[in-house]
Image (cartoon, rainbow, N blue to C red; front, side, top):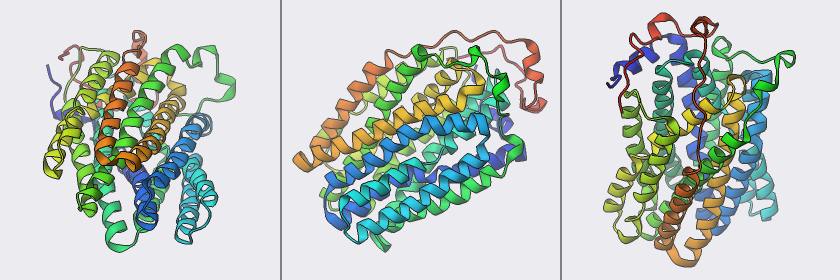
Length: 422
């Protein structure tokens, strides 16, 4: 049977949990404002979506390369120092990127700054999910916690695009990008300061062969996340171009918000269900439905019907993303989870960069409608990649596992763990 909405109350019942998840929300806001902020800044000042897509691609591809290294460093050194160092790099680089664009400096300087932006991109999402996994491991409430974080991700992608678009189009082209950095800095500092909920570090002397990541399980997940990223990055650029062609550029963030809004609704519902299907099967089904939902978009030219189709399409995003995190969590040792999530983030960020760059060029050549056909193409890539995702059967853990340090208090454990429903 369904776990019900009471599962959220149980997951969020303690002050320390509410504190780290709120800080994680603020620290992740740059996720929704960086790419869009760069596209708005460069497209408004130069008129080129292709150039904007290339700069965004450099930033996101750098994020892709850096994410596993940051994750590995977090697992070994703890979250606090890494989060602070990364957010400082990010904000300094954002300042440099804005300066080079406004001064019309050579694009090489802008691209160099974009490398710094990508290098310092936040690992807060992986850090927060690692805290949840440490706290709720081996309990059905872990799915609810992952769903809650997916809901917050979608809230980020509702608030962030609207805020970035408003600031960039109504106040100053650079302000949408700069504001995300400031809020992200505050969130990262707040999250870093909450040391009591951090997962324990794994000392070098305690690392052993069983802690190795399995490429056979992890690589297909990374490729599937890259396909998702291609879809997300491409759609963001296409929506901006679509709004520009329709003469409603200031409302581009609202259109992006509708996609995220559908995902938020689905994420809330997903967290109330205790599933019988495994995460790999849920991921494959969600990916296929998400890809199929994109097919009508090139044939609708009016903004309101397009927004309606995006709401329906968004209903398949959060369940797919939640399943991708659950697949990763089930496929790797607990002490390597942040690093593994870094690898999936690498796939996602790399896909976002490739999608933004490729569809930016498509839009320059054929307009927004051609861009929507390109988004459908990313959906086909997603289906192919998702069908390759597998996970090993869950290991049987000793009953004493629930009494280890970091386990949730009794009031967070489900009263009944034997009930399952689709």
